[in-house]
Picture 1 (cartoon, rainbow, N blue to C red):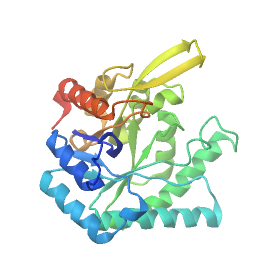
Picture 2 (picture 1 turned 45 degrees about the horizontal axis):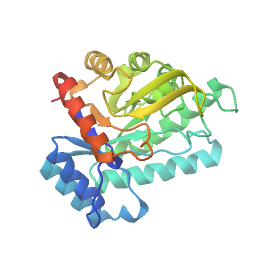
Picture 3 (picture 1 turned 30 degrees about the horizontal axis):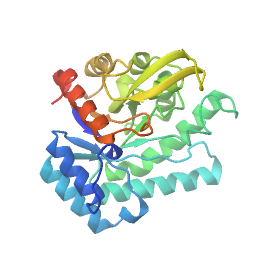
Amino acid sequence: MKLGSVPNLIVVPEGEDQLKYRVEKSAQVGLSCMGVFLRPEMMDAAYLESVAELAEKRGIELRGGGGGNFYLEGDEARAEVERVAERLTFLAGHLGITYSSLASGPMLTHHRFADGPPLEQRKATLSTNLAALADAVEPAGLTLALENHCDWRGHEIAQIVKGANRPNLMMQIDTGNAVSVFEEPVDCARAMAPWVVSSHLKDIHVTPFATGECRGSRAVAVPLGEGHVDNVAICEILAKEAPDPKSIALIIEPFYVPDGADVNAFFETSVAWAKKHLARFLS
């Protein structure tokens, strides 16, 4: 497995290039992959090719990420698939990505608890649209990884991907997002493992019934090792059941960045914990 980070955990000093600095920092701290999220002004072919060249020199694999609204139907769905496929194909051609994680829809409004059509109908719609997207990006050599993006539980992500039935549509497990849909992260890993090609590693401190200003169940973002997500057990499951464990990217990501947090400390603590406690899984 390969250890990496999402870009927002790597603080870029003023005046430095956003992507290139993060590639250099990743290599400096001993990471071997990095998630990439691009603003519109970064979508320049020559610039992305220079980033890809630097990443290759530094031994950093770049992995894409994104999403769309794949709950749409008819002409709207076809237009959305075309839009996302065009962007991913561009990134594959100029940034050299071969894997991209994928969110199935806006997580604040489209999730298993939201009003809408029956859950089975929603999952079937996602399967249809994601199959079309997988077909559209297949000539570019892209593998897509559908994430449990605070929307579905692990067994439901498996149902969606199996319904699409495309060899280049796999899964990215987010180990902390399971908590947001009231699922034990280890159970989520067991359900998704046979299709996992990538991971967002999170840790979350859970209080079953909190008191004070915000009462009720509470899930708080913390650095790796300071919460209740058993990422070691999850990696053990992936090592045994994933199709190609050595190629899995373990990308450190916060559930959210807490107000007033020292982002550098959050990053450094998480990297140090992963290197120590996940060492036997890293290649």
